Each structure stands twice: as structure tokens, then as C-alpha cells.
Image (cartoon, helix red, strand yellow):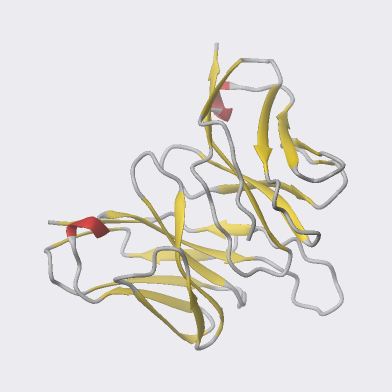
Length: 119
Length: 110
């Protein structure tokens, strides 16, 4: 368990309203990711972060912004939610040992998901 | 990151080995192959990864071809609880973008 929590776990909102999803980790891992998953499909990368205030776009970043002001929190914001953004959102982190020189495995650990419904 | 290609679905009899293929013909020399699975609507779970050599852990075995253009995940004795969507991805070891495809839906049947 990499100590990842997502909030809220479920949210229903209306079109045009802003929404922020939070991903919190307790182990100071450098890399964090936001994915979305639509029914019957795989995960698509929205944005990722490789350190505090360092973020980059994924394959489906339009309509989303992110912020990482401290290591433990990675926020995903929908400035004006649309029905096409109804989805399940997963946060993930890459896990590496903290000491330099030691090999890491680089696997991803995922949170439990946040189900967002935009009416 | 290199793209991967997986069959959309496979069936396997309970107790038999499940062999899930993955093609990654554009993989670069420093990219690893990772496998994950997702049960119901839970977050994906890491299974195994490798670079060149075959790997085995308590969950599965990973066979990577010599040219590294394809790999096979082997669940040696599939159980009903192994029914899930299995994702093969390739990525650099030191993180960065990780792109998932649609995976393979494995159904283990009694």
C-alpha cells in the first residue's frame, strides 16, 4: 500500500460548475498521475507530475488543469465541467526506493478512484 | 512511450494456465514491460515487469521474446478470481508518461 487516498470518492455535479479532485500520498513519491477511465475502456492519462510545481500533459488534457504545490498532494481541476467528463478518475504514483543508487521497480500504485457524474 | 497491442478478450478454464500476449514492436532499448490487472472497477494492480529476461513472482511469469517486440504474461493456474482486465504497458524505468491501452479481458471459467 503506497498510502494513496482520493477525495471525493463520489461526486455529482452540474454542467458548468468547477470541480476539484484531490490525490493525497503519505510517502513523498516524486511522480504522480491522473487517469480517467470510461466504461469499457482502458485508462487514459490526463496529466502527470514529476515534482512540486512540475507537471506535464497527458493524452487527454483538454478541459483539465492540475496543481502540485506540495509533494503529497496532486489536484485535478475541471474549470467548467461538461457531461463528457463524466468518468472514473484514478490517481497513481510511481514507487521507487528513496536512497540513490539502489534499484527501483517503478511500478504504479493506484488509488481507489473517484467517480464523477456531470449532469 | 511505446504503444502496445493486446487481444480484447480471452477465456481460460479454471486450473489451466492463462497465457496473455502483448505486442510492443516499437519498444526502445531502455523501456520496461509492465503488467497490471484491474478487477471490476478497482484501481489497477501491479503484477510484474521485466526488461529483457524472463521474470517470475508469486503472481505470474513474464516471458519476453529475444527481440523484445512481444511478451506473454502467464498465470500458471488460473482461478475464478483471476477474471479481470489485464494491461500491458511499456515505459522507462525512471517514470514519466505511462500510457495504457484497452487491455485484455480475461474470463476464467469453471
